[in-house]
Image 1 (cartoon, rainbow, N blue to C red):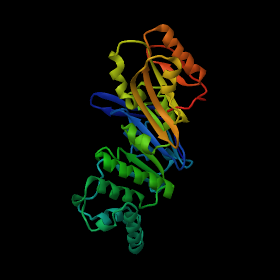
Image 2 (image 1 turned 180 degrees about the horizontal axis):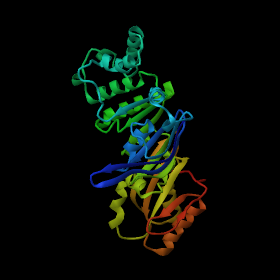
Image 3 (image 1 turned 120 degrees about the horizontal axis):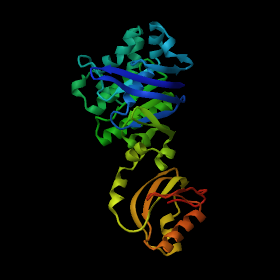
Image 4 (image 1 turned 60 degrees about the vertical axis):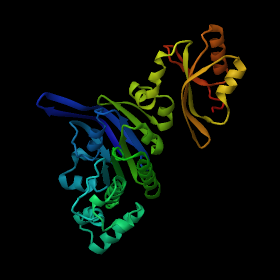
Amino acid sequence: MIELKNISKTFKTKKGEFTALRDIDLSIRDGEIFGIIGLSGAGKSTLVRCINYLEKPTSGQVIIDGKELGSLNKKELLALRRNIGMIFQGFNLLEQRTVLKNVLFPLEIAGVPKDKARAKARELLELVGLSDKESSYPSQLSGGQKQRVAIARALAPNPKYLLCDEATSALDPETTRSILELIRRINRELGVTTVVITHDMKVIDSICDRVAVMDNSIVTEIGTVAEVFADPKSETARKLILPELKLVETVSGGERIRLIFSGENSFTPVVSNLILSCGAPLNILYARTKDIDGRAYGEIVLQLPADIRAAAKVKNYLEAHGLTYSVLDGGESHVGDASEAAG
């Protein structure tokens, strides 16, 4: 388990001090894929480097498997770091080494016997789908192949934890999907606890169990991906998850409401039932929902009729059927028991 307690990090620059992290508290559970998301400059990359003490926090504690990293000597810290693999956006491969020798590198440093190290490296190349590339050099590989080599190298010392710092940012969408599938497979088959740093909510939505949202050096909210996706509490989370909502600001007419789906059955046609039952015309201004194992997650933004009585009828229907909604024009949120199916 990884625990971060009151982590702060301040850098001294020519222009003065700059605080990259401020009072961060996080717990990352064994076996999960934990996402940390934020806009550029939020402090997420500094945070992940504090986890393995590549950056020493100015204050606070990093505790991994019960060991507080700040209390360890250099030898003890080095030994603990072998339990933490890391992959980067830029791959960081050694260009003068073949694929096989790149994967062998951490095993050589650890003093693993050559035969055993080669067998391990080849096993990992098979895991990441690059058995046929062991004699190739990084310059001969695509971006996705380079990242697979980097993943194999990170796994070579049998780490318990894997830190992924914007690992898919330099890749095209299709390659990104394949790398994310590989990371999820590694998590499931090897039990490697994984921390994913990204600015892309689609990455978080694809593989993560829980997510922390960062903004201006602090964590603004933490929750399951379904919770944050369905009902983002912070302005940063809303910008990352729902950027298209800005498009509805200029729409004239009745009040706008946001239906929130956070795990209801996804097969009942909620909007159709709503229109038929209330006899009220509704504009769909925005919709983003996802079916996960027959459950709906996401939201739909609707514009109510300008007629006050018709709009009230719609709200009464939603409340009577236990549907969660919020008024986007400054009104209150209403949370039902979600007994009505969503779809």
